[in-house]
Amino acid sequence: MAFTLRCQVIAISTLRVVLQKESFEEIDRLAYGARGKAIATCGVRSIHLSWSHFTSYRYALPNKQFPDNSVYYGLVGVGSPPQYFRLVFDTGSPNIWICNAKRSANLFMVENSFDIDNSRTYTDHSKAYRAHYGNYLATGRVASDYVQLDRRPFFTDFAVVDTIQGYVDQLYSIDGIFGLTPRQLNSKFSSTTLDDMVSQGLISQRVFAFVFHRGGVKGTVLFGDVSGDNIPGTVHYVPLHSANSDYWMISFKSGLLTILDTGTFRTHLPAAVVQDLLSKVEVTPQPYGETVDCGAIGAMSTLVFSSEHFEIAWYPWQYVQQAAASNLPADVLLGISFLRHYSTVFDMDKKRVGFGKPVEQQQRVGVHHEDAAVGLTFEVDGSTRLDEGIPVTKRNKTNIADACKFHSVMQCTSCAACLTQYDRIRKREI
View 1 (cartoon, one colour):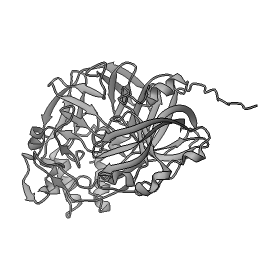
View 2 (cartoon, helix red, strand yellow):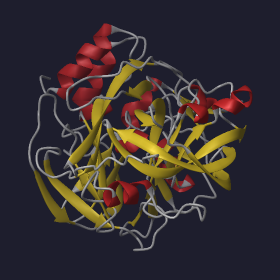
View 3 (cartoon, one colour):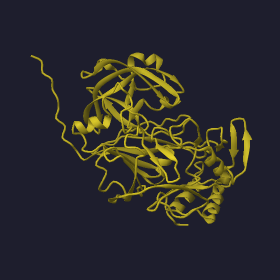
């Protein structure tokens, strides 16, 4: 007699995935015009996401770098027994997908592939899978199996990818994607991953949050209950542009539609905004675009997202490797390069997105929630803001420049003097 064993999962309040900075990568600072891509790159961080359980057991993941410079990923188990994969938690994609080990010859850049024969709970649905992911096309099949987060399993549909066509350099550092869009966008899937986590009692709410430490040095991805001691201070909420929105899209007072996409590093801005950022500095034409001197970073504008209740600022030394792009489903796309300077709550149940301060080192404080609408303005220098809490002043710029006579840039990672000076300014010792 055959028996099928199903484990009862007791709902817990929060699942956690811990983010940690692995290393830095120093590359040239670039700036492109309205037809180009990057605004600026200098001292770009190569940051990776490592996994940590409630028991504080941590998987040590090797540092890997690719042309997009930074990636955040978590270790996710799939199958019975679980096979582990480095997946990007992507708010711009609807599904989980991993690569098929039987097609590994076609996916040589992927380090970890799924061996379907080694999972006793794997189910093939005989449905073709085909999806575009920005620069590449993934094709394969739809399947079901157990997925583990923080050692807690739940049963869900996902894609097993056989082929990938297009620009795939990012896949040298990751094994796939953990999609987190508000709605299921693929007709081959009946529910989202968070729907399955809630229906099977893994979490009690369709809510998750990216909680970063100041400067994006490290952080945590939370699933479920994100109240309590997870985010410092007040979380200000903005409603989704539409209750039936396919993406995490919000609308600013200025009328700009903005998508929050943790699956891409770069942040896309309208061409006019890019030109405004570059208007106060001298640019040098290059075959690949335009070059901006690193020492001119202090003269560039600070972007300030403002409302009646709070402001969110993006300082010049933060918007590295950004882009002006067309054919987006919105006016602005805020990638992880922007979002890593805040704590961001994605609430599927209440159709809203919340913004909070980053966590200070050694700090864990309570959460207070407050609704707000957001506007967009531009300022040079500016004052204390929600994210950094450090005024940008000429004195700060001078001290930073004096710290390194070779680089003269806020986040120069090539010498100890720059890092020491930068840390002192962050701690307001200067």
